[in-house]
Length: 69
Image (cartoon, rainbow, N blue to C red; front, side):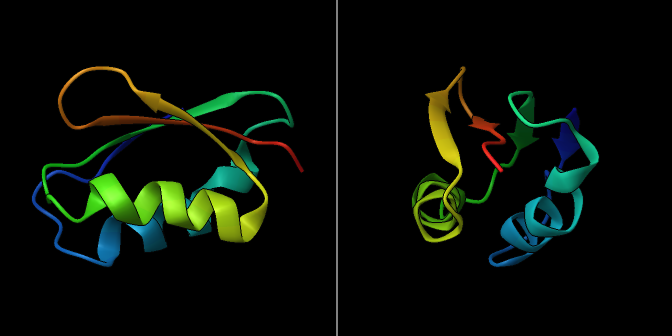
């Protein structure tokens, strides 16, 4: 799944991720497209708090999360 959160300011990209990540099966990836600089720290922090895997950045403004539960 790819979430286009470009143009959204903190904390909206993380809120969108939190609302939608359960739409993918466990083990699948969610790519968050975000141009807000806070996303670089917010998305990995959300993953740590929620027990999901932050895979990394797949290019500028592309944050990859693997659903673990």
